[in-house]
Length: 229
Ligand SMILES: C[S@@+](CC[C@H](N)C(=O)[O-])C[C@H]1O[C@@H](n2cnc3c(N)ncnc32)[C@H](O)[C@@H]1O
Image (tube, rainbow, N blue to C red; front, top):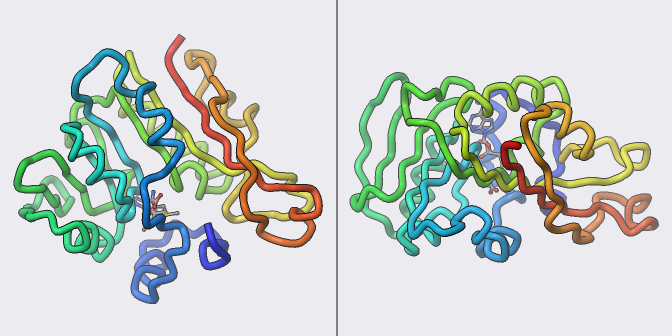
């Protein structure tokens, strides 16, 4: 995430619309996320094809890559421009419809759906529960109070046999307050609760958000794998 990505977190749709309008999207990665590429097998297991939830999806290119492998992707994104750019930039023909309070963008082959609206309004009325989740820049973008709301809502969308990859930043918050906000394992385990098991799959040093963090070789990008006990 470049300096552009380091700004106060705000859940106001206006805030995110402005960021997309000004192209202040330092969080966006031009290439597939390497943690997802390396650990996709954790989601796929023995299944040939899976269905994956992308909360706060932006225009993540991983969605088209997964669809090209035959998987189904369901994204949820506030900003209409982000949805439009995803399909335009990846040359994916699509249809747009209105579904229960959301604008729904669907690729012609049906493999990719993006619900344009708030994640907190997206429920199992829209889509059946998910067995797979890729969470980058969603939980991690929120401060603690919103993480309580987010994790509660996320759990309401999950199937019993869920496999959930959570990609977050971790660093010493006395040296930098965020955003993006640091995620400590204890906090994640508290919020997701005792019914989940947590495995740390990756911990890689990332470019520092300020000099104090650089001096102590932080932050780290951490990848957790959550499954139910
Ligand atoms: C930090 S970006 C991460 C985007 C994407 N996951 C990625 O890795 O490139 C957060 C995205 O979430 C969207 N967003 C913020 N609040 C949201 C909400 N309540 N519901 C759906 N999308 C939201 C923003 O518009 C933005 O595109």
